[in-house]
Image 1 (cartoon, each protein chain N blue to C red):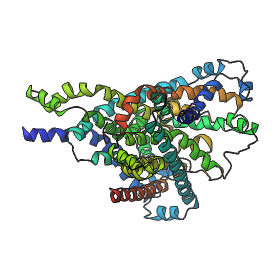
Image 2 (cartoon, rainbow over the protein chains, first blue to last red; image 1 turned 90 degrees about the vertical axis):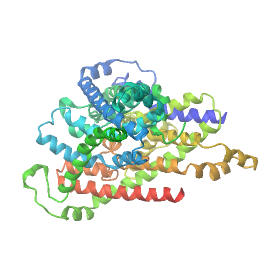
Image 3 (cartoon, chains in turn purple, orange; image 1 turned 180 degrees about the vertical axis):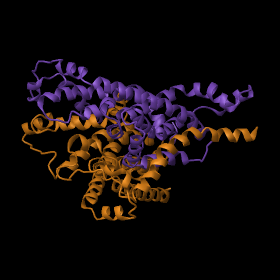
Length: 262
Length: 287
């Protein structure tokens, strides 16, 4: 069918860059200089060079930052999302909250953040970029609202009849009910933090660079570097790709913030 | 019992408010004050209060207006293309029971969550005149395009944005379509309407809120474009691709003119707020 063909073309356009980058990561300098030659001999040199470079340290930094940011966001955000969802606090102002945070250009926040961290002599640590990444909190909260919407109110009422306070009901009964949603929200937040360049570039130095910053460092155009750059790119995009492939079901529920039914 | 219930739902908001207050409100206030001083990173202790001078010099700065113009053009091109293509794809995947529907739906979304800087570098590589596969393929059929010439560069950056974010539009629009009620469509089909007419007179109007929401989100994100520019053109050639976010970054972190950069951020916030208000007004009018 025509539809199938069109969709396949779209898919080709979407997947080709990934395929090409993966291919290039196995090419030596000579092969890089002849892109149309598919008869090259694959090499692991690029991957070896990348793994031996400080990319791995940056990758670990990204993981640390992501995990910390997600833990904080889930803790603070789940309470807030529950409040927005079950108690309808402020009505549709939850959506405005996200809008407000999205409106803010990172350029506005990064300057004072940088200056404060500089004064506190924190610039050589991961602390500033963790703080900066907490700006994903409204998005993560918004993502969770849809999942809390699906939890029936009777659940907490039952728990309270059994003698819990609201806080206890929340932790003992509601949280387990939304655990998959929290997982999806956590992964969503992790990806947001993982992908950031702007804050990471300006708030980390040398040893605490995150992965995107390290990848950005490949902005030189010598033939030799392209293979390594490709390998580094592949490393950087793995979490995002895995996330998309496995979380597709939850994506819709979270991203539409419960605004759309079903 | 009742008063306790009220307290919890507000208590639950405290962590969120505290964190956001510290991270957003405080820097906003600091930026606001800094925008009225001639604060420079190299002379931190000696900032004098200079009133509206920063704002005045920004308004008369050609670079600033060029950056704003670049950003606006970029947003318009990118978001329009994303909407048209995204809507068409959503329409295809919704209306027709396409083969491998779920597979397409999942795979088409991958670019959305890929690290933007990685994508920027990837496309830079692929569009490179000598090393780029796309350039080579086009050359072999006789087309020679300099993707990052002064005239093309902004458009090329917009195309990269379209590649990455059309899936997002597609996701949102498809979700919107799937939540539309069946009856109006059935009624129209009985009246003999088909294809394009259905879309124009039923689908589009009913989807107005979600369309506006999707457009708004993409436009807000578009204003912050930075990674592709950092990866490929660094604002060039000349200032042809300097977005406003990149311009502020340049003034603050390479020229160290913090006061001026803060003032620029505030002007950007005002510009964005105006755009949001206009979009909301359109939304209200339609509802």
